[in-house]
Image 1 (tube, one colour):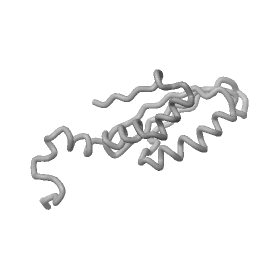
Image 2: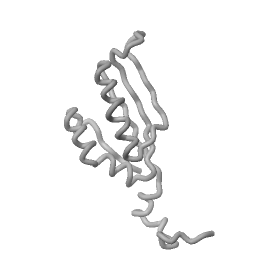
Image 3: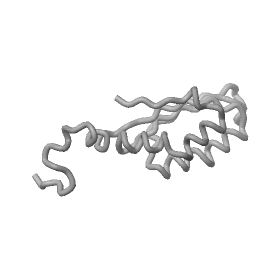
Image 4: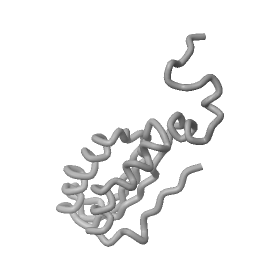
Length: 114
């Protein structure tokens, strides 16, 4: 087994290294009331998630009508990050916190890790 030149042999047992090595996930469910906000979300939030290392591994879309155009509904996402550290860094980033504040979501969105 090759020695890791960056970590001491038993580093994997320290909590600070576990945060760097364990994949972490965001579970997001958002209500989007109209087509304009849906397009804004797709054009801004989804590229930002990718830019901070997030990968959408599962999505669910529930539209509130049978219309072919978006007229409201819910979008559910499971977003994978390479580590708990990366997931927390994205969540607490200035960009994401400003987004939450601008949408008055500060009290509705939380992060927890196991």
